[in-house]
Amino acid sequence: MSSLAQKRILLGVTGGIAAYKACELTRRLRDAGAEVRVVMTRAATEFVTPLTFQALSGQPVRGTLFDPEAEAGMDHIALARWADAILVAPATADFLARLAHGRADDLLTTLCLASEAPLCVAPAMNRAMWAHPATRANADTLCARGVHLLGPGEGSQACGETGEGRMLETPELLAGLEALFAGGSLAGLHVLVTAGPTREPLDPVRYLSNRSSGKMGYAVARAAREAGARVTLVTGPTALAPPEGIECIPVETAAEMHEVVLSRSAQVQVFIAAAAVADYRAAAVSTHKIKKSAGHLQLGLERNPDILAAVAALADRPFTVGFAAETRDLERNARTKLMKKGLDLIAANDVSGGRGFDADDNALALLWPGGGTKLPRQPKEQLARQLVRVISERLRADQGSKFKVQRGCNP
Ligand code: CTP
Image 1 (cartoon, helix red, strand yellow):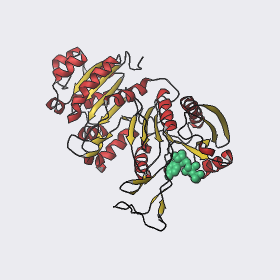
Image 2: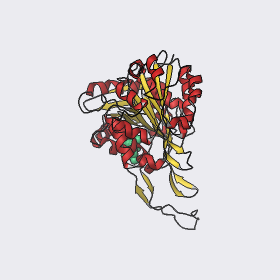
Image 3: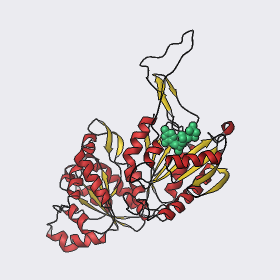
Image 4: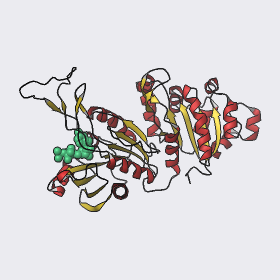
C-alpha cells in the first residue's frame, strides 16, 4: 500500500505549461489513496480550467483569497491546517520567488505560509530561467528553509529548448511525496547514486569504456528507494531499464557525470558512487574517424576529475560512500582509498580474474574509519539491501556531527 493512502494533499498549481501534467498527477494521487484538494493561481487557470481539477479531485477548486462563499465553507487557515503535505506542481520561477520572499499575495502563497505541513515544490520553467542566479538563490533559500525541492529534471522543453528545468514526471513526483510519509531506514532522505561505466570518445565512432554493467549501482538505487529514500540515479550507458520511482539522469562521459553530480550534491544527504568512472579521457577527440596506418597508434590521454573525491571535499558534504575494485590486497588498498579520498564508507570488491563485473552476485568488504564488516557473496539485489542497511546505521552513528541529514532538504 502506498504511504500516501489516507493522506490529505493540497496540490498547488501555478501558471506554467506543465500545469496539464498536474491533471494526471491528481488522478495518480487519488489512485494512491490520497485525498486531494487543488488550489490554482490565477495564471494557472489560463492553462487548465478549474473544472478539470474539480472533476479529477472530486472537490471544489480554490483560487482566490477573497471568496466569501469558499471562506464560509473551509477558510484558508482551516485549509492550511487540513493538509498533511502541500505539493506545488508546477512551480514557476515567479512562484519560487514569491515563496522565497514570504509573500502572501494570493491564496496559494498564503496557504504555504500558514501551513505547518511539509512543503514540496516541483519547479518547471525554461532552462535559462532555472539557471538564472536569481532563481538559484531563491531555490537555495527555500532548500535551506526545509522546503523539499522535487526536480527539476532535464530534457526537451515546451519552448523547444533542451536542458534542466522540466517538471519531473508524475511517478517521480509521487515517489518524492511518498518518501515524506514512508517508514524505512532512509525515510525523508535524498540519496544520489552513480552507476554504470562512462564512455570517453576518441573519434566520432570509437570510445574508451569498461566492463561495468551498472547492475550493482541500479540495485543500490532500488534498495535506497525501498528504504524510503528519494533517489536520483546518474547513470552511464547501460542495458538496464530505468528503475521505477527513481529520477534517472543519463550521461555519457566522466565530465558530464561530474557536472551533474556536483550540481546535485548540495541537495542530497547521501552520495553513493557506484559508477566505474573512466580515469582518463582522450586529450583531443578527433573530429574525423581515425584512420589506420602501418605503424603504432599513440593515444594521448588526460585525467578525468575524481567525482567521489570532489564530493567528499565539499564543505557541507553528504554522507559519502565509494566503491573500490581491487585485484589484490583488497582491504589494505580499499582502506587507503577511504582515507585518501576522505570517505565515510567504502565498499570493496574483488575483481581479480574479471569477477564482479556483469555478474548477478558479488561479495563486499565494507570499511569505515575505525571499523568494518563483510557481506558474503549473494545476489546483488540482496547485497545492495545490506549495504543500504549498513549505510543507514553508519549515518545514524554520525548524525548530529558533521552531516546535514537532519536539515531535511528534499525528501
Ligand atoms: N570514482 C569517481 N570518479 C572518478 C574515478 C572514480 O567518482 N574519476 C569513484 C568510483 O565511482 C568509485 C571509486 O571512485 O566509487 C573508485 O575509486 P578509484 O580510485 O577509481 O578506484 P579504482 O577504480 O579501484 O582505481 P585504481 O585502483 O585504479 O586507482
